[in-house]
Length: 513
Image 1 (tube, rainbow, N blue to C red):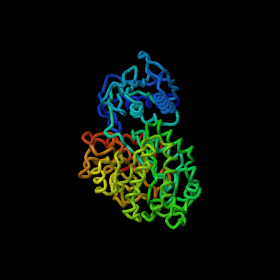
Image 2 (image 1 turned 90 degrees about the horizontal axis):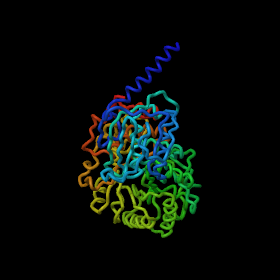
Image 3 (image 1 turned 90 degrees about the vertical axis):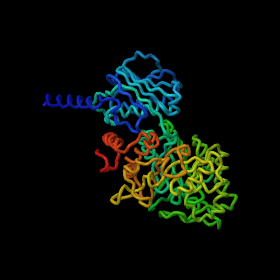
Image 4 (image 1 turned 60 degrees about the horizontal axis):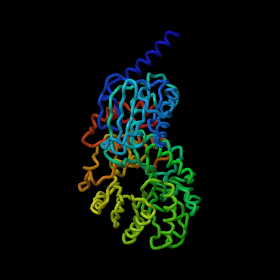
């Protein structure tokens, strides 16, 4: 029995080694890198390896700590972080800020793997982080385990040069229709960051609930934070919790963009404060899923004072340069009221030092410079935004809404924009789907998930994965270098990694898992 056990262990190590010493150019990396050149030999991580920082930088130090914590559980290696430029060290990983390769931009990196060392070099810490996420994918899927694993931890030699097509590669979570805990939100951020998504758009308010503490207006959470779709207990984030989410995301090269949806989708506000209604009567809390029935009283000056107070508190906790004001489906707000309202919102947001993002309906207003239109439903609105000088974030519901059902058999989700299978969510070209919106008009892409019918993180995982992985590649890789036939082979090999992570992904029959 002992001999048999020893043989099984040796076979496991041998198989793992065989799986990890393929040519670098054959590794199933997602998103697809710009350039991969295979080299000779391989690198082996060991218990003697170190993470080396040639020049101390607090952001780089955090990236080194992130890498160590991702590699430690499965390998058991402590991987000390040292300030060292000594290139003679054996089996070390170097994180180098070089500032010498303008082609890489702010988020690109060069990952050089040799038999005795790995070097990730980049112009900015964001690039180093992206290189680290690629490095994770070069190890076997076992590297993602939370417990010690038997593996050789060998990866093939070569050079990867990589940088993104779009600077904005987003994902959105609706925490208003159903509330999700801080740990759930962090989990989703972790999974998205693996595939180099770099913007987290959090939908903090809607008819069904208000999810962020505002010190000056406490009833927003005391009343508006109680409800959600279908009833039952809900919740909200304290300001301390929200700051924690923002900091957690920042370490993962993710900018948080808060959304307070205005002037429609506001029933939770209207239930919290009677004076926000034109008749000064508070609305009842709402737990249904219909849209378009609510509006702030746009004729009251006090409404704008309220909004400025709210946006000021949230902006102070959010260092990113954007604030999302919603603006969609405000069906009961007359257009002659809607346009001046959105115009004033742009002024308030600018006063707070942020750039406005709004759903494509805001293109009906007088867009200010550096306001951004998020295309989700009406192409003519997005085109109008371009004509007014705005750049567009591409989130077309028929390709990018992760709450759309995969097919008629999907047990939850919606289908008002049609079914969205895995191929369709990948096989679209942002600059080609709307005449009048060219590559130069696009800021980037975003994959929203709305939660009218989704109430658990396991269900979020099921609807997001694997489609969010494909959308991440749409944002990272130019359309000329993407093909479904090649991508689906790489995606198939992500299945083991997702299983090790415990992700409840949808096992699409389009993929040979």
